[in-house]
Length: 139
Image 1 (cartoon, rainbow, N blue to C red):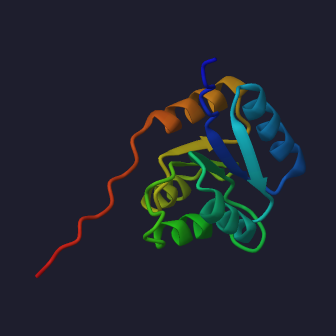
Image 2 (image 1 turned 135 degrees about the horizontal axis):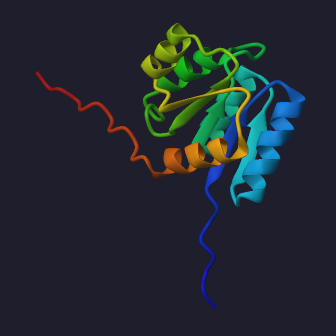
């Protein structure tokens, strides 16, 4: 009997219940294992504990916004660059896009979005190789 390949684990941080339900449902139907948080602090804790294959972060969340989540993950050497992140938000100014990319986001999708866009972007996020850790320099 062949072993089933494990489903990729996608983490979602979103405080809007309707959007969260949509994301969890669409990703689950597409075959992903999905976990989620409704605020940024819970998102950081869950990401650090579960080490998902990819994460989707809203920017506007209580306790810690999506930028704060990315900054916290980037500053943690055990996880920095190892989890590809997509920002999914209604905030889509050039400054927000640039800030997300500077903090380590690999993709940026504006709300509202189409299901096909979401699923294509998540698949691409999971195919991207992890960012190599910065080499240690000995002097």
